[in-house]
Length: 305
Image (cartoon, rainbow, N blue to C red; front, side, top):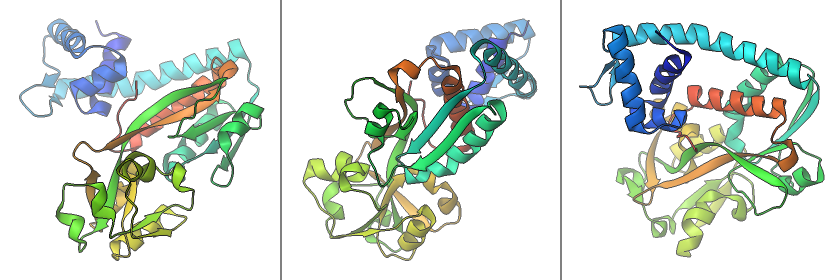
């Protein structure tokens, strides 16, 4: 009675945290997902989801089916990958560049998983902080660029990885700490701590400050996220960073977070490839592994599909 799609459904509910998010990941309507779940519960004769809680939680029976999914689905996917390698060949080149300092946090585990599955693909990684990566991709110097700043270029495809919220980190003693959200003019008297890249490549300027024609009182630059977090915690400035990049510092009670505007600033992170490479099996596998790692390890991200 249990089918692979049922196992995938319960896995999506766990990883998405809600029926709506799970439906988006499975490319279903929430109504269709609910119908599928109720049909399975009828077949099994037991509820799998406690709908009285908010958010709904898996029952003991649901958790048992989920344990089966954790055992079976990886084996199915591993077999599918083996078949893909047999069909498409094992060799290739994947030279990557990242246009996001915080991306190292999740990219390295994804690369390790990829190496294990595609050992004969030549893999290389560079940080695209000192050069323009997208023209290098078009030239063929790179094979994939991870960026949140897509440019209108011919012959490239932007494949969404996930959505994330850009939030403002402030110290507990900063006057902004009591605000649920802040407006651009509230940064006019603040020191903004950023990564050492041009303003045109920083979302806090392009998506928040520049449209309001606001400049911070000063800009301070730091290379690493832990250093930025320490500077913010000591009230040396504020910083706009992806929500998932700040999780470990929030758990330590160092910082407070404010949304950028009432609705927040949401950005999409893309894997960018040349159009002719979108069907390459090893690139598709890299994207699958990367999404899997991100949704298992990062807090506060959403499906971009």
